[in-house]
Image 1: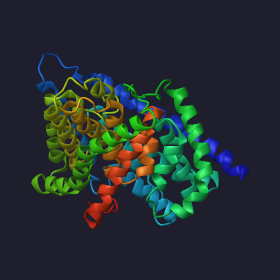
Image 2 (image 1 turned 30 degrees about the vertical axis):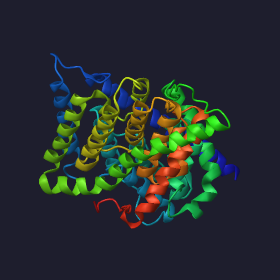
Image 3 (image 1 turned 90 degrees about the horizontal axis):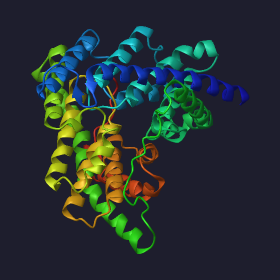
Image 4 (image 1 turned 60 degrees about the vertical axis):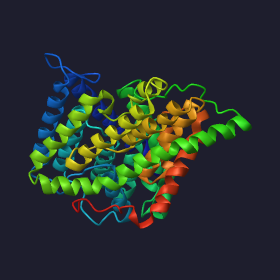
Length: 416
C-alpha cells in the first residue's frame, strides 16, 4: 500500500508537470494566432477567422495523413484507450513514442487554431501513454500506471481529483477491477494538481460568477429547480444532437472528401464560418462561458438558440473531419446558451439555476456520465448551484434512457 501511494505521488506529480507544459504549449501557440477571438492578421474583416481556421484544418490533415485510421478523434477515443488498458493491460503493446508525439501535435494544432473542442482528450491520451511506457521501469502494471497518470493529468484541468477519477471509471468495462485504484487515483490527482499549478500558476479557478447563485430554501428552492428542469430541456436537445450526429457527420465527411487533408480543411472552413458569424463559437467555450452568462437579458431567445446551434455545428465540423479534442467544454457552452433562451422569454427565471442546469443536461447527454459531469462542472459553478447541476444531469440521463438503443455505442479506435 505504501509503495502504491509513493508511486501515485511520483507519477501523478510528473504527469501534472507534463500536462501543465502541454496546456502552456497550446496557450502560447494560440497567442501567436489570436488576440482573444480576433486573428492577429493584418487588415480588418471576419474573413481572417475563416483563413486561420482553414489553415489549421490543412495542418490537421497533414498530421493525420499517414496514420488517419489509428489517430484519435475525441474524448471517447481517449477514454476507450484507457478502458482497454484497465480491462486487460497485456492486450496490446504500449503506444510508440512517435504515436504519442503525433497525437500531442495534433491536439496542439487543433486547439490553437480555434477548434470548438477541449484539451481533456489529448491530456488523457498523453497521460495514459506516458504511464504505460513507464510501467516496466516503475515495476508496476500498465493498468495501474495508466490510471494513476490519467488522474494526475485531469485533476489539474478539472481543479480537483474527484472528477479526474470518476470520468474514466463511470461506464467503464473494468470499473470493478479499477475500483481498487481509486485511492491511488485521488493521491495522484492531488499531486498532479499541485505540480500543474507550479508550472502554470493560476490555471485553475475559472468559476463562473452567477447572479444569485444560492437557490434559497423552501418554496424558492422548488421554484428554482422547476425552472432548472424546464431549461434543461432545450439544452438536452443540443446535447443529444451532438451525440447522435457525430458519427453520421464523420461518415458523410469521409464520403464527400476522401482526402484526409481536404476533409480537415473543409472542417476548418465550416469552423471559420461559424466563428465569423459569432466569435463565441470558437475554442472550447470554457473561457467564453462568463461572457455568455453576462449577456443574459441582452440577447433574444432566438439569438441564444442560434448561438447554441452554431456551437453544435462548429463542434461537429471539428469532430467529423479529424480535429482532435474533447466534447465536455463545447457541450457545456452549447447547453448554457440553449438554456439561457428560457430567461429571455420568462424574465422571472433565475439565471443561476437555468445556466447550471443547461450545462449539466448537455454535458450528460454527450458524455453519458452524469456523476462525472456534475463533478467536472463543479469546477466552473459555485457550490450553491450543485442542485441545479444535478437536475440538469438527471434530465440529460433521462433523455438517454428514453433513446435506448438509438444511443451510439463506443467503438474501438480505427473503426469510425
